[in-house]
Structure formats: structure tokens, C-alpha cells
Image 1: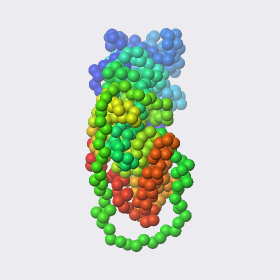
Image 2: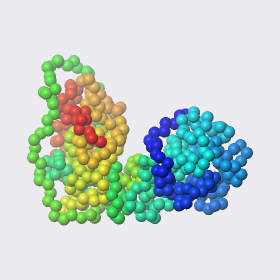
Image 3: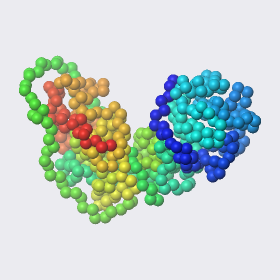
Image 4: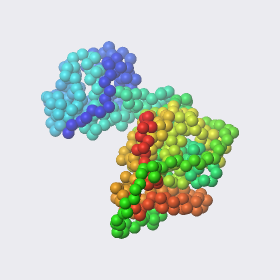
Length: 481
């Protein structure tokens, strides 16, 4: 196996000292200690789950320095050098002596594994330099060593410090915030949409989790996932709607057609007025029960990021209809970003009588997601919305025609024969899960859904205005993140 050391930032020695101090691997005065002494302290601090000196000694005694001595015995009589440093280092990284490397020659294995190392360690500064880099090095299971120490509880020592900002090590935020003290709340963002044409702008439910220290004034960036699936799906009703695929392929008539004939143009419709803001507050009125979350987002919570989920138009507790990939869904996600950057209003409840800003946000947003979720991240990026700094899209759609059609033929998307844009719109219309709300919305939505069924055109499979409205490739020039 060969490890590619991605995202390792090369920094000068003075910065390494500062960062090791910041994460408490170096304490005041440690820089003046002899090389063996400081190395011993580094090793002890690498076992935060061993609380006493006796326990730490036991942990260290299980690290082999040579074929004949453990590291404790070795340090009592010999000076640390590069060979011993990396023989022990490989064990800390989870590699096994004899199986993965030779204690007498750890460098051959490190060359083969593509792991970085210093050829010589002779002085205290060499030990500090090498230890910093070792913390950033991939372990046998792929995480770096500092992530492994985090799993052992290394950063819990920071929980009581009331930090005013995240702590970074080698360019990466570290898990210094207690995830048992997170704040959970719900707001309703007023969108620039009226997809259900009820004369009021659609309100979009936004589910927030943020570090407790934001209540003390800390401003944080946000990880935002736009997920139409997040609040539930209508699997049974969507299954009943599946289109038959047992149909003969018919020869098409050749007709002259230009792109201008089918190009999508946004209709000129007048939006309802914005709701008046009479009262503004910093206090949310709703919390939320724990739902399915994404591990990457959870990973960032401990590192000083807020996490936001929103299903968008037509999902449970939001207004509007699902439109399957068109501009309305794009703008719904964009509007959440605009609330996070301070340019859009949200309310504490659906009654919309108290406005609430994202006062804890520093205005910087990253969007994450896979498949439909990644698609909405891509779509939002094509708006060029301010504050969206990064998107991490996996297996995302760039043009919905290429997902549901191919070269004028209707195809089965992702192995779901009979699915189409109308089926997915029904699948994600989770307002259906709230009986009272669904009673008010179902007639209008069913009528709207019939237009999707017609306009998606399963008869010819041709690219038309419907699909052009769902082609984000036309707007990639607007991407700024």
C-alpha cells in the first residue's frame, strides 16, 4: 500500500512551535528541555486515555525501540535518533513490527509506504520538527495521527476553556468544542419564491446545530446540506406512480429545431411583497429532535462549525412545491445561504411575526452532499451567491436531462426503471407527511405535478425547455466558490 499525503501544509519551524503550543503538546519551557526529555513528554501526551504516570509508563513500555529494548528502557541509556524515532512512530501510526516494517530499518517501509520522515534527528529542534510532522502523517487506517489522538480524548482538555475561536493545526480545525453542549434550533427563511402561488413568499424550514460558544459571541462558519430527503420521503406513493417501461421504441420524425426554439427563459412573474419585520429577536422559538445526520457534518461540529440542513420548497414544514431540479429549488438553497450571510430574513415560526438573523454566523458557508444533495450544492454555486466559499459535491447531477435521458431516449436513472422527474418530485414532497398541511396543499400540488409529467416528455425523450431549465452547465461561469 502507498499513502498519498494530501493536504499537508509545509510550515516554518517557528510556526510549528506556535501550533504545538496551541494544542498543548508543548508547554511553557519545554523548548529548553533535552531531546530525550521532550520526546518522552510527547509520547506521554500521545496517550491521553492513560491518566496516571503508572498507566502511561505501561503504554510506553509496549512500544519497541529496538529488537531488545522498549522505548522507556532505551531512553534511560541512549539518545533518541531518527531510526528509533520512526520505529516508535510507525507503531504509533498503527503499523506492526515484523509484519509491516523492520525495527532495524523503519525507513525502507516508510519509503515503500510513501510516509514522510527526517533522515537525521540529533537535537531537540529536530525532535520537535519530526513530532509535528508525525502528528500530520497518515496512520495505517488512513486518518492522521492527530485524528487518532482526538478519538482517544486528547482535545477534551480544551472543553472548559471557553474558547473564543477554533484552534487550527497544520491548516485544519481541531475538535476542541464539546458536542454535548450544542444548540439546536429551527428558523423559517423567507424565500424569493411563491411556487404554490398562494400570494405569499414560500417559507423554508432551516434546521440548525451550532456550538454553545456562539452564545458568548463567537462567530462561526456553516456547513450547509440542502437535502430534499432529510425530512422524509413518500416511497409508497412514488412507487405507485412509476411509469411503465414495457413500451416499444418508435422511430422519430426528423424536424428542424434550433436551441433558441427550446431555450428556457425565466418567466416574468411578480413576486408577493416581503413580510414586514415588526420585531427582531436573537432567540429561536423551536428546537428539533435528532434526525439522520451526515458524519462529515458531525465531524465539523466539534471543530467550531455550525451545521444547517434544509429540505427546501415542498418539504415537511416548508411552503411550496417540489419542482425536481429547476430554478426554484436552486433559489431555495441560495436563499438559505443569503440568510447565513445576513442578506435575507428568517422568522422564528411559520406565523412570521418575529424576524431572527443568523447573528452567530460569520457569513461563510460550505455546502456538502451526494447525489441530489450534491446536485443542489452545484446548482447553488452557479448562482454566484455571496458567502458560499466551498462546495463538496459527490456524484452530483449537472444536467438533469443526462440523468433521465440519453441521446433522445428515456433511460432508467441510477437503476430505477420507470422513475422520472415527476416521480422524484412526488417522492420528496414531504408536506404529505403532515395531514393538516397536505389537505391544504394536495390539490394544487397534484395539478402542478401533472404539468411536470407532461413537460418531461417521455414520448420522444427529446431535450426541450423543461430540461433546459434544469441544466446547470449553462451557468458554470457564475461559480465563484
